[in-house]
Amino acid sequence: AQTVTQSQPEMSVQEAETVTLSCTYDTSESDYYLFWYKQPPSRQMILVIRQEAYKQQNATENRFSVNFQKAAKSFSLKISDSQLGDAAMYFCAYRSRSGSARQLTFGSGTQLTVLP
Amino acid sequence: GAGVSQSPRYKVAKRGQDVALRCDPISGHVSLFWYQQALGQGPEFLTYFQNEAQLDKSGLPSDRFFAERPEGSVSTLKIQRTQQEDSAVYLCASSPRTVPEDTQYFGPGTRLTVL
Picture 1 (cartoon, chains in turn green, purple):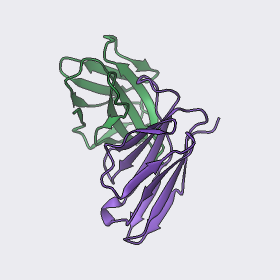
Picture 2: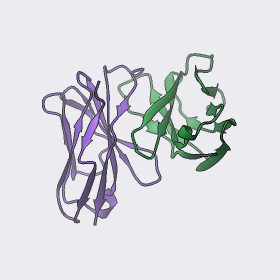
Picture 3: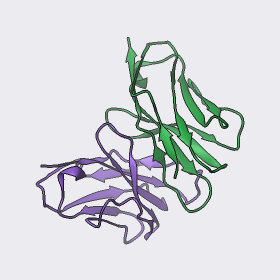
Picture 4: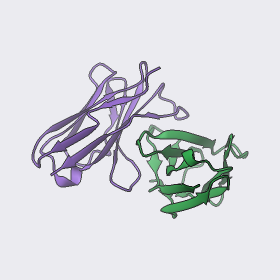
């Protein structure tokens, strides 16, 4: 079974600064997807960024980028030029690419506070 | 277009009552998932539907939990004889196809409180 670990329950960042959220995972599979989801206080989970394990290039989406280290099973999220609207709970998630499993396996989350 | 909707948004039940939680996925989405999110935790998988077929129910915590999607669109998660440990937010997600690269789109959740 796969596990996802987020060791930072809370993080804070000054507006306009950069912050990195950590995530590690454990799997015996070689092909999978990794995700970062954002959950604002309204509770609707929103996809932030996705990484395919077979791609060596790190994914980027505007101010959001990842540092994917497959050998180390590490998948961190960097938020540049932080904005007040970035404040939310962030979840790292894993999804198998093979077999019949289609569900996401989530970490326990990191609560991000953005300070004005 | 409309996203995933869930109703009710909040539900308070007395211990022992039965509850039914509804999920309206995005129109045309084949895959539908239910997750349970305890306070301060990440969501945990409950069950998965492909159209009307329930292909995976390995995450349902007990036989008091039952889910259905009879016409391949709206889904209902039913919890019988609710217990305090059932208190959580129940999230529904849908995706267009069955392939793993598809994004899952989440609803706002139903917060269930069992007294």
